[in-house]
Image 1 (cartoon, rainbow, N blue to C red):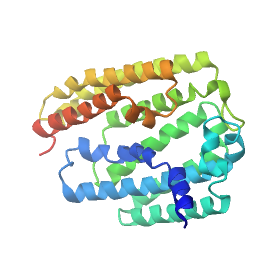
Image 2: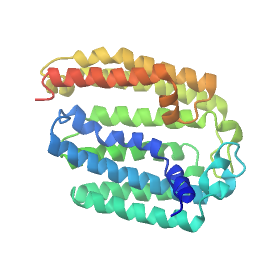
Image 3: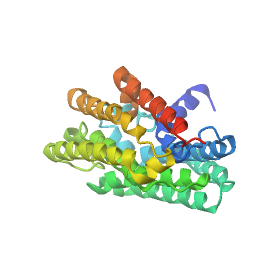
Length: 291
């Protein structure tokens, strides 16, 4: 493949969005397996499989959305919409990546394969017709994150906390509805039409509910039990509060359309996330969760 075509393919795969597949690693980390090499190897392999599957999904989505994307001031530069990447090439690579994702998950057990297959099916249904259905589109995206969490737990295997599931799902909903906010006024033919007032209300509600759910998670009996009776994880709540408020500020001030790009572009938000990871990690592994 020529260098220019390869560059277009890589951009269409959206590698920066692979960060979202970090959800796969969350069950292992919060169950105290971050320094368990065999367990983390399984989790990382499953995360890699989801990276391939998600990139394949982006390629299929871009092929289906190519006409609508050409009328969008930002999306018209996507490789498929701009003509840099041919339709046949995009679909061929999507098929190869889907196959590679399934192959990578085969060694992690039948349940992991089923979780990945469910994610792939959901992604395809979303790209074909679910993405045009208001509310359903966002629920589907959030469910994709939920499947990542479940797959990560199945790979170890470890029993995933119901609080972790709730927090992950709510955070995914917040980011998905937040992404719709700057798109509302220029929604394409295949995008759902949302009233701005509705999106503002929903984003505000989800921000508060997500913070409350995370706070309850830090002091829940099963969480403190894993940490040797300590509720030190409660100390991370201010970091989560700052992160949510900072994201809302960027969303209303700048129209933070891409949460991943926003994270890397905004230094205060990035610092808050890194500090949360470090602080939560230290608490987990000094309070008994990592032993």
